[in-house]
Image 1 (cartoon, rainbow, N blue to C red):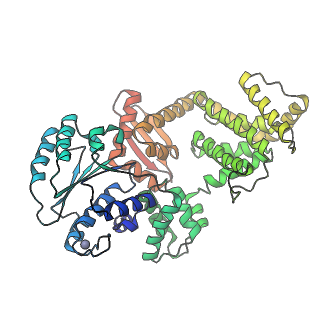
Image 2: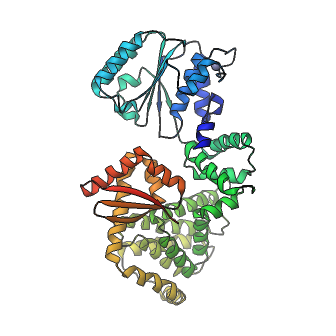
Image 3: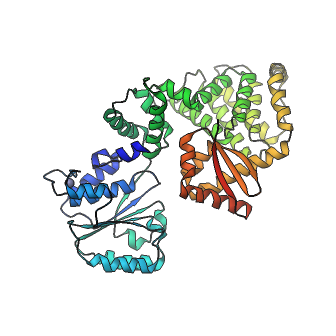
Length: 489
Ligand SMILES: [Zn+2]
């Protein structure tokens, strides 16, 4: 976390989001600066850092024409290191009652000690009780001129409209990869890192729109690269994301070639690695979707995939995969629906460029699956048999493996899916992280999650996240369960 602390944005210009930068520059350069802001959006997008920057903008002692804070004067420095007595950061979760807010109202009246403006930054403001909100509202209705409020929340719908309407609202969204690259470049330059653009882009795509997650990865990468130049390849090798992106492309290639054996082998490997099948399916569908749009001329066909799949084929495949996605919920084995798609698709006749014909064919396949009564043509049957012969070894090995203790596995994977679904409403991005992890063990009062990535473990080990995981487990099992996260290898 060294980089994160060191390179936390200190000026408006250093913020990731172009939209937020622009809005702040506009509103802070105006004559009337709002006395209350509401910052909304998911965790890890820099709401609190931004609040501190705003506090500096209104209090910097050395500002001339520039809006940006100098970051050198006493005010700026004390705000950066959290010692400014006039900038009060309040955690809404632990100060949610009427007494705390009454206390705050009393103190709001007192003028600032040194600063031009007292700034109250209330984090997790949605946690306040109704009484506390009412008390806060009175202050917001008649704010003393020496006070500014910055309310932050991950759950804007829980903030009463009466409060929200008195604030200048800025919505923080997940950063685009390009926005993150801009921020990482800033760090790379200052740290004099030997890293290429492709590597930065890869890190950005792994960061799930969060600067915080991204710098963690960057730091890890710098750590293991030593003196070597940091390239995309180096990161891929290290993270074995050699990777999901690559494996998804590989899978699509196998499907295109009707190479059923290799496709099934790949699934078997990925299952062993504990990859979430729903996630894999979604990645494949997403890739095909981009390809479809490119083929249809909607987007530019820029290095999406090295593929010769025709539009009708893509359509057919997507339909099968979407169906498989729906069936996942009830699947006895999570990999089964995808395997069925591969076998079904591989058994279909060779490719032709007659688009409508293929599209019709795909339609038939879908309805066959729907009716669950396969009635393949003779030729297709023959193809299927031939294909299965080739696949025999791959297929039988994974089939027998599944049968052994399948009921136990079924319980485990069912539980895992349910668990991720439970976590999602609490925190979408944590659910996303979990998809990349696997359930190592669940017995009685202990639940062990396994992950290959250090930054995943760190995320899941955060106090608040851990609370969510335990809450979700309790929701399902009805009892307190101790959750732990271990690193694979
Ligand atoms: Zn300053």
